[in-house]
Length: 180
Image: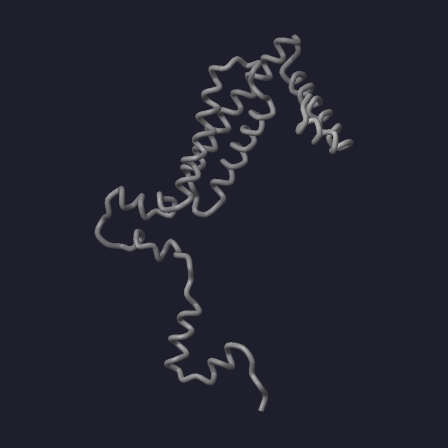
């Protein structure tokens, strides 16, 4: 007779009634699929509020509150439309543009598909692209260059700064912590 280890051995020694009750507890899930959601059960029509409340992207989930918070970035970028272009950061607005573009695409890939988040990211892309264009056009007008040349020169400045940091990271940290 060989010794058995693990749950199968334990289950084999118990009566059938006890196996089912103990195993039911072990197989419990901590999530709920869309098919098990009470909002998806056929029955009398529910109000629009009840449908929103029980939705997989409703106010009970992070899929609702993350876009609400991200609207702050969109509104801050839109508030910068009133600022002169020489006071805007090209790298910051380029980052907003890239973030908006990348996450708009991912909002259609991830499950559950969140159109509210996609709309926020698309508007973040629009705001960032508008501000980036304003900065590039301003820089080009100051140097009488084309927009493409201005973008290349700004990128060269960033590359130069990054190269200095890579060459001597301690000096870069010191310059940030102890500015003169």
